[in-house]
Amino acid sequence: MALINPFEKLLEISEEINSTREINVLLDRIMDSALGVLGAERGFILLKRNADESDYQIVTARNLTKDAIDSIREHSTSVVHKVLESQTPLISVDAQADERFSGAESILIQDIHSVICTPLIYKDYLMGAIYMDRRMSKKNFTEEALEFLNAFSAQAAVAIQNARLFDDLQQENKKLKEQISLLDQFPEIVGSSEPIKQVFETVRSVAASNATVLIAGESGTGKELVARAIYKNSDRNNKPFIPIFCGSLSENLLESELFGHKKGAFTGANENKPGLFEEANNGTIFLDEIGEIGLNVQTKLLRIIQEGELKRVGENQFRKVDVRIISATNKDLMEEVKAGQFREDLFYRLNVINIKMPPLRERRQDILLLADHFFKYFTFKNKKTFKGFTAAAKQYLQEYDWPGNVRELENAIERAVILCHENEIPPDSFQLQNSDPKMPLGKTLKEINKYAIVKTIEMTSGNRTRAADILGVSRRWLQYQLKEWGMIDEN
Image 1 (cartoon, rainbow, N blue to C red):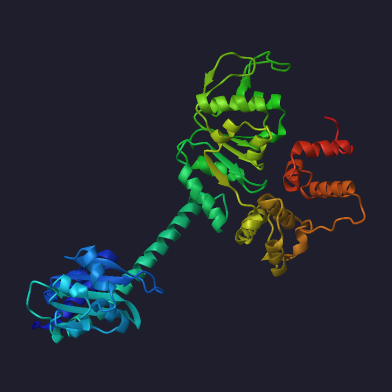
Image 2 (image 1 turned 90 degrees about the vertical axis):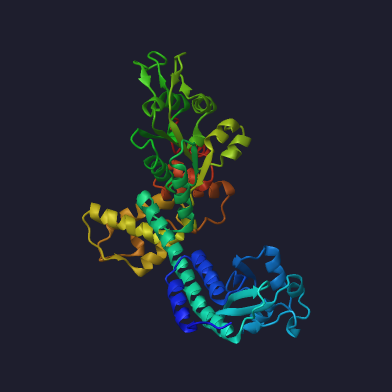
């Protein structure tokens, strides 16, 4: 077959395919251009799946079934196999009589008359191959056709590589935009580590729904910040957001706070009072440390979730409310269910969406980001000027285990900013407890137990709830121990 102005045609096609950046469109154009110029009847392009593999996949084909393609490329005697193995172009003017393919059943079965195949190579890297053949036409491919296709394949390989790089850049750009979008959506949550990105993704996915959300994690990990982020990105963001810490109230007082009470329902109930659920109607309520609520309150809470209604304390009348519930806990609620302290049906109702907040020690990548965030805030607030943290201070912050999590880090930075009088903040300005405190030796277990409890309460600046979290016990148990040692009043 004689080609008219082959190099002029090559330039024309190369300009066309190199202007295409979408990989699938590009591959189709390469295939159609090659078939059209060479007058081939059938053809396909195959490319490596991954750079380090010898596995190839068909990326585009014309007038060939998958079975036919598999037959052509599978065996060691096939045209494609020889081209990939030798990385050199191949032409068979009369494939039926060609001794190189005497064992190739596909040549005979598919009645292939003439074959041409060239490798796709980019800078010595074998990407794949272009295959074409003729069956009906008795015209043969010529050496001129092979020369053209070889030059064309070199241009096609460059175009494919550029398209792949462009696609990679687009994907990376998309990821960066998503990350920026996440930071824009949740500016109050600082972090770029994988654990916190997973939290961002979950928050973004669930914010627009009305599903209940249970946020689990140690104290100080930022559970309320996540609850507020869900609220701000929801359709209820123009309605009330009401948080309540359930662990600090007695059961009777919590019941009255949540559901309201009727005048005269109990001593001190001097007027009718709506509860927080009524105040949050059409909005969102955040129940922090929900694992602390008693079984009676749990039952009433379950009715709100199931029926959307409540009764004030001392009333028989049901009132309708529409409130989204977000709750948080530092306990293993399933263990509380097993212990009979928490209703199983309520647990599943609250736990439709579960978000696990990672402790700071599991997102160390974020420690210096958070430290810098708090540093800028507290220096501005306190009208202080520092160069920043010393290298030793940064290392100290990075290596400390932060049992009190982000809240402890925030307190440490605020304290350092207020107390430090040097140009840079050194490690001793943080006044943190040793992450591996020296336990008293030669003491009884009871004495060691008391030592651990007292030191933990000191470390949390007297916050008994946080101390209980760190010790892995309930706040009630801690209160009991302190009462037994005479360290708190009976009330």
